[in-house]
Image 1 (cartoon, rainbow, N blue to C red):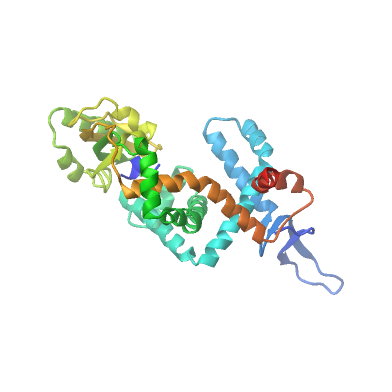
Image 2: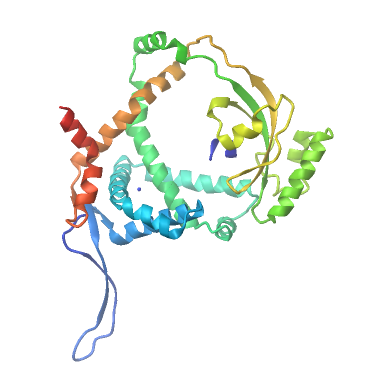
Amino acid sequence: MKFIRHHFTVLTCSLVLLFGAAASTSAQETEIRVIDEVIAQVNDGVITLSRVKRELRMIVDSYVAEGKTREEAQRIVDEKQGELIANLINEELLIQRSKELGIENEIEANLNQRFLEIMKQYGMKTVEALYAEMEKSNIDPKDLRETWRKQATRDRVIQREVTMKLYWQPSAKEIRDYFEKNKSRFTKPEMVSVSELFLGYAGRNEADVKTKARQIMEQLKNGGDFDKIAKESGDPGLLTQGSGKAERLPVSELMEVVATPLKGVKVGGYTEPFEVDKMGLVILRVDGREEASSESFFDENAVRMAMMNEKAPEEQKKFMAKLREDAYIKISDTYRPTVSPILFADERKTKEGN
């Protein structure tokens, strides 16, 4: 269910970017140069001041969107500049590793598929139409795509280099021994099965969408057929593709925005319409509920996942430390005092512990 599950080299000199030069005269040449300071060199890549400022602006904007004043947001971000630069260096290392692994095309294909799914969800036929709707909501499609690309790159590299290796590492005996020692962790959780109606705001007046949601709720309360409404809306772009699809979900893993409306709704009942990410309204039908059980049961996948999750945080730290160790990283004198302690914090702790 889309909305239930959904929901960041150094040269001591400056990098000179030549943007253009004026025509020569017999006496002299006039050049226009823009100087962009290089904060850090990471192997063959660089972290520039303009890139850092761009990232800082995006973070400030996100804080403002959450309700903070721009001055307050700027103060918070300024205090975290060293952390941001350290994150950008780690991000650059992961991007370089993704190229070595040859998974760039895979990541790009997944990004394209993600945008395609959104297009289908909102009943749009072109990417241009989707981008136009995003811009109306003050969302920069290029910034969003870049953010998703960074997330996907990090996730894929960590998955390939860390978590999948941890998943397949334990032997059959180790899996069984772990289960026997941790039986209380492998019990049946409380489950809820739901079907969804999603009414999107895209290209529509929000007040009209909310009115439509109230009308649908009246139909449902008067015995209307949920599945028929999902399939036969008078506005196929309003009730989007995927509406009516059922899913079985662990109650403990539900986001609060979903868990709260579902609380107390009996099988066959409906939630009141609730908003998700300011993108639209959702109505859920509860198709089934399964109580939690204290009885332990063996599930190899669940045990492997538990063992993997237990070791993953420390192994990720070791992996990133190894990337940094094998890389050429040079931070400019201006930024080294605030960046290095953060960037190499794990390595320092390891040395202190030995």
